[in-house]
Image (cartoon, rainbow, N blue to C red):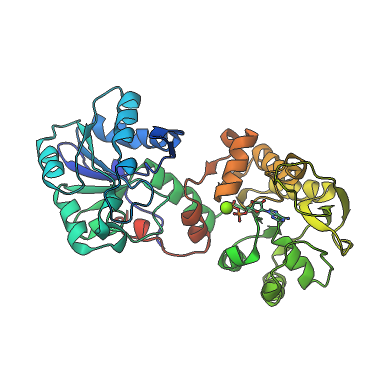
Length: 399
Ligand code: ADP
Ligand code: MG
């Protein structure tokens, strides 16, 4: 995939009607937005377009209305919050590509901004129906994709409209593509990837693809036990993808053949059982990873492993991290994840974090502003790391 894509700065937007796909899929409770982080993140692109005289037509999905007009998933609350943040009016359309949206889009003046209703009120959106894409595109002269979280989906508003309009990235997508694209295509070395999370099967293709690119691959979290089992270690009651033991053996052989250093936990924090509730009290001890007792469950990396993994992150020039090192939802079992987050924060490397839970961990732990790039799309960033072509990025014009 070509990562060198045109952005809003590479085209003229003045006087143009610009259809800008945003990620306004914000959490709400009883009709009130509980986090406006995604709206705030979209401001630089929106403000650039307004300041440069574009007629801005924003669009997004929220939730999963599945083609039905569900009033509780209306984007009106987003328009209101966005207007407060911009300090300017945001014109709200009563529909997506209906009479009201089209009339309001046609009446827009330079520098004005409007928001269409929830794209997923229309069945054609997720089906990437060409008729719907054409209707959307008919309101505009230029398409800007600034929603990375949906870039791995070929939907009408993420890729379909690019069949009818010139397409470029907004700042959010540009940052994702340039930083992650550079890491994958032309990384500063040593390049270290740290993978964790619950299951090997969630990240099979990521492991396989990263082994082609990295100098060191680090495996922690629940997925490490299947690798340990593949090495012949007993893992007690720890998470184990028995069917994937063969795969882990193949990956270890691949690492060896490619000269990639593969690091697994050398010590492990174990308990009698998974904590219930997940953040409840838990009694733990630390054992060597090749000596996990048969009746114990591994729930975090031990102290020696923390030093090993964090040290590798600090010595790297590029680090990609996806997936927590343990059951970080529990304070007793969060130490491995904290150590890795801290290792990234203290590293001079270009540091990239993807994955919903690892991102949440970085933010909760207060390390987010010391990370070069925290990806805004869990699924999209995984597909990126798998080396797949993302439709919402592939459709943008090459530089
Ligand atoms: P991400 O969202 O960052 O990609 P995942 O969803 O793959 O991460 O995995 C996160 C989950 O993995 C967390 O809920 C965490 O509790 C769980 N996990 C990590 N280590 C273990 C372990 N040793 N045993 C069981 N679950 C684990
Ligand atoms: Mg997750």
